[in-house]
Length: 219
Length: 219
Figure 1 (tube, rainbow over the protein chains, first blue to last red):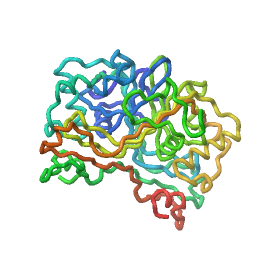
Figure 2: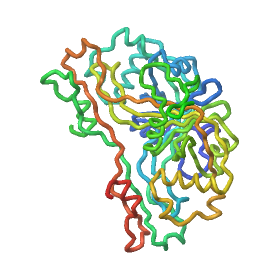
Figure 3: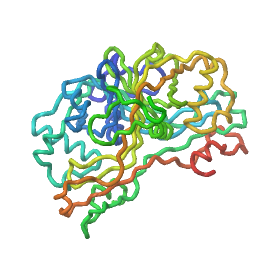
Figure 4: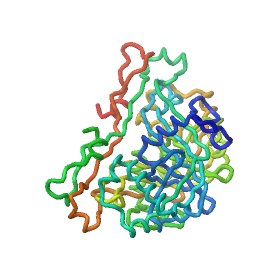
């Protein structure tokens, strides 16, 4: 594969339409902007899709979870997965039902899980996942205990194939429909972070930290 | 299964923690509030997860897409799927990395696709999907043409098993961590619809329709 793009293979080739993008920069930007990934794996010959937080380091995606869960057990063994991140940008309102759509940016990553057991990569992965949820948070919190580290399962997915799909802009209606007195346009959709709310146990005088301020745009 | 809840089976049993909810009302409410589902299926022994718009009618979820896509071809044959809808409500900021989390409401639906070919169910399904994206829109648009109906593939998934998982509220930190001068709390997250933008071909005098006004809270 070239440095700039993921190779197009049977696995990631987007067959229909012209919305595909295989550039690393596009794929990485979408992965970095999302909060949740939907991770698909196979269990007893059935597909299972679960939402997970995640983090990215180069061409590796890290996932974590309590070691006791069905998913972590399944994934720790090395399993093919599909990791999908979708950012919804708008509802596309066409003049016909057929031309309704969504504006979005999405990435599908294909790979096989590999358990992360070495202390150094595990700690690094947990830092990456924490900082992906809230940039800079790792360095603000109480360090992880051995017990916590033991209870947490971490898996890495080295990206084997990936593709992005993006749609933006106006509806694309039938030419003849533009003459109809029917409204067409876009309703923008955004994921918005509100003002942080300190919890009921917060000590007096503890201020909202830099990571949170930055995330909500107050810094 | 009882009228109020989905039966707990091997497929949908949530094994860890106490966030599971099998009540029909909970599952349906989350499905109805989401815009996108992440649909997982198996193709050549690999899981594939793609974002899709959808609609619900009782215990049936409808999906649609261009007939030419890999997914629609795969699904039209009758395939086990996992349909997951996640609403992100907040970032839970703990005093340790371990107790960071997300507030969310999610549903995982398990079932097997069945192609919808009868004209009556197909039209009904397309109405349900359109009105799920934008309630009431079906009756405002130009009726679907035969050609459009032919090009659109519709599959139904009768819910075989389903479970919801929800987390809300404050972080749950280690008791000893509450004495540390570290901030803990929640950053609320919301999916927000902005002011509708008419497209460049909009005829003079065509007003924003009721469906759009209602969706953005202006009616």
